[in-house]
Image (tube, rainbow, N blue to C red; front, top):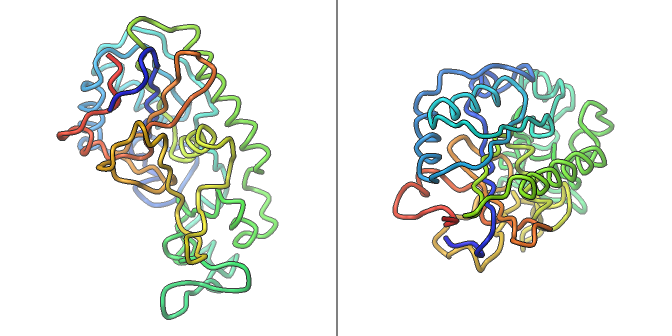
Length: 289
């Protein structure tokens, strides 16, 4: 895939699997789990990109572990910027407790679906399983990052970050990435790796797409049922063969990409949550060299 000449490309990587990921819930800052297969795949993708001009990383143990693995493997000697706004945006007991505890506390069985698998009430309809609401998914419930669903599912829950907070942090890290390109821009165009979390990456892609936060994690389909939001990016940059994936969560083994245009004033999504296996096959990531 070609991006406009002179563009920088930021690859939004998700950290390698942590102990929290392996058990499906747990503490906010858990170290990496054994993940040799995922590590090998991620590093193969990074090698396919050629020279890395800048590395940006979150600050949790799982980000640092992933970033250190990259630095060691590719013998990276360039600048590394650390930014805690790339950390998981969800630091809440809801991600630490078991699914059973939260289901009981919020009576999530009230979202049990109809016979066709859809929960309905006046003004709203969604597939509770697809949303990670019932059965509840502590790490990847899509209601966390959806303005349309959060209050419906977790009324008055104060441990989840407000959407004002999420908007402020996302704008800040988005601006910092663009500023980093201005400071470190090279010729040929830059390749930047950003090691973040699936939640922070999702919000960055959403903000780059339409300057909103919490609006396209889920969207109503043609039948009025809320479903995981799909980001298409710029159709001119994305061939029809590229699979379309939900914006959140970004799975391990997936990558998103933003192109920062030569004017250095804005970023445009190239693709969201594309499988590394796909990119390492007969298809290449955005060409910037």
